[in-house]
Each structure stands twice: as C-alpha cells, then as structure tokens.
Length: 481
Image (cartoon, rainbow, N blue to C red; front, side):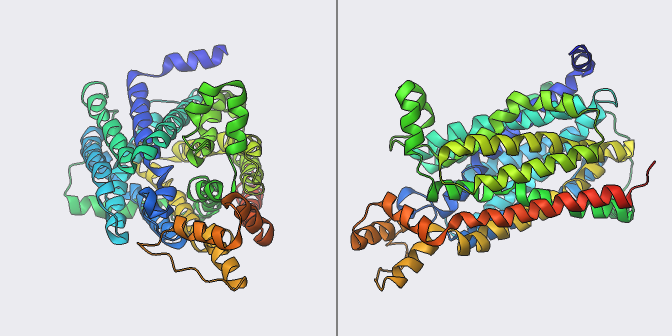
C-alpha cells in the first residue's frame, strides 16, 4: 500500500480537477444514457417514445459511434487551441443539448438532438484522458488510469439511481438533471483546471486538418496497431450490451418483485430507496451494480494488474467479461444478476483501463490527445455493432413485443396494431384479457415458448472470438522483444 500512497502524492492538482470533471460529465451522460433504451422503446402512455427495438438500435448505435469517432479530430483541435477553450465549448453544447432533448418526440428530431449532445461529448472525451496521461508517469500511470476509470464509474453509479426516481415523476426531469450537473464543470474548468503543457503550432485551420489526417494516416500505417484496434471492437460490441440491451431485457423478462420483497423483508427503507411505487426495481438500478462494483474494487484490481503486461491483462479480462456478460442474459432470476455482473465487472476492471493505458504509453508526447482520440475508434465500431445487435438481432430473437405478436398470431387471435392511440401496454393488456392470464404469467409463457435468453449465445460468441484474436495477435504478430 505504501507504493500506492506514494503514487497518490505524486498526482498534481490538475489531475484531480480533470478527474472531477470526468465524474460530473459521466454523471450527466449516464443519467441520460442508462435509461435511454427504455425511454426510446417504452410505451407512450408512460411518457416514453414507443420506438421499435430496431429504431432504438440504429439511433443509439449510429450516434454513439459518431461520438467515439469524432475524438480523432477533436483531440487534435484541443492540442491546437488549448484544452480549456475546447472544454468550455463542450460544456456549452452538452448543457443546452441535454436541456432540449425531451422537447423532441419524432424519430428524426430525437436523432438530431442526441447527435448534438454527442458532438459536445466528443469534444470532451480525449481531453481528460490526455490530461491524465500528461500528469502521470510510468511509476503511477496504472493507478492514475485506475482512478480515472473509478471516477467514470462513480458518476455512472450515482446517475441512474437518481434518474430512476426522476423518470417515474416525468421523463423530462432526467434530462434536466443532466443539464444541471454538466453545468458544474464550468466552475471547475474556469477556476481549478490548469492546462497541461501542450506545444501549440501556429498554423491555419485548413493546415491543422491536413496535419490531423496526415497524423491519423501515420498512426494507422502500422498494420499491427490497426489489427489491435479492430480486435478491440469485439470487446466494446459485447461490453455495450450492458447499456443497449440489458435494460430492455430486464424490463421485459425479469420479475424484480421477488428481489424487492426480499430487500423489504429486512429493510423497508432500502427497498423504498432502490425500488419504485409498483413494488419492483427499475432496470437501470440493477445495471448500476456494475458501476458500484467498480467503485469498490477498481483501485485494488488496478494495483493487482499494474505489473501485468497490458495485453495479458486484456486477454484475461476479456475472457472474464465474456463469461459474466453472457450469463447475465441466460437467466430471468434477478438474484443471479449480482453474481454475473460481478464476474463481468472484474473482467472489465482488469482490461478496460489497460486499453487506454496501452495506447497512452505508445503515443508521442506532443500528440497525446490525437492518439487518445484514435483509442476511441474501436469504441465507435463497438457501439455501431452493439446497436445492430440490440436492434434487429434482439428484436427478432428476444423482444417481448415481437414475440407476443407472434404468439397472438399463432393462437389465431386478433389485436389492433400498436399505434399512437393503441400503445404497447394496451396491446399487452388486451392479450392478457384474450388469453385469461395476468402479465406475469404471460411473460413466463413467452419465456418458455420462445427462449429469449438464447441471445446470450450471440454475445458469448463475440467475446470469445475477441479473446482468441487478441491471444493470437500477442503470440504471433508482436515481437518477442
């Protein structure tokens, strides 16, 4: 622990102010994003938008892919114009973007509003990672990036707990919360953040962009590095199912009443805090377990893997994450989520910070933000493919509404199509009336009839392919030196 204590003392004030901004930005983002899949696909009579799973997947996957692609450019802009200036622009876009999102309800308008928010997030992302890299060295970078990742998850942990309460009152309150929290970063960047040393070059904007793409070409000219980035897409495709698919899966298939009752049996106050007025627990609260585990164990895990070769840590971490994430979709018992998400979290904590650390170490010191921007390319690809899986693939294999419509058709029954005037809840209620069952029995019948849990085979296959590919990359392509 003495080595960890010495590492903490070496971190300058800028390191801590940057990480605090990361905490607030992630709080704002995850307050919105952890419930976004539910907001997009939920029944209109509950204030949600009623989009299909396919529409949700395309919207979330495409916009977030763009968000993670843009840091390739925005990182270099930060290097040219200064981190503080770009941060202020980012927070202006984010605060206004979150505020206006609930005013849009059509698919195209929601797409545009979410894209506007994504641009603000893309301006922010490479700067904090670059600041952490600039304010750490070889002796404390593992701990430094572990703290950075822990801050991400503190924000990610707090936000859904509050959003779960706010959305019951009104979905708009979730977005207003995000707008208010991100606005706190104006104070931090103006009064506490000291710009790290970055060598600024005096050149025109057009020349800057030419330099950007020239540097990207140089960075991606190493075929080994490109293969590494492509492989990492597999991990992020699997990882993002925690946000894209799991909330819908829990909402549609997991009966959380048993968990709520179990908690209430020994602590009614705790049950009230984590549950809702219906005697159930919101999906975003359960997926939030991942962030809770990371807050508790991240520094410990980082200290354990700090001596490991980054690629070895990634390979083992990806394997553990694959096991945990896949099993999360294999059961409809909420108690199993505590175990499967813990397994997933251990793998995530072992591998995800190592990706950022690995790329940060190989980046030239005068192009750290640019190279950190390149580190987001696999995330872009991972989010895009995650959207496809959570959209069309989940929609056909596991979406409750789709399977219910198939079930009704096979039974020879007739129910009006879902529309603005006949919502998803109306469809489910009518099906229950015609079949003479309650909604929980109906869900159980659909589970036994169509086995929607088989979606876990898809996620397991992607994860294992990534593990094998990275193992072969390490053993066959990298030099022994």
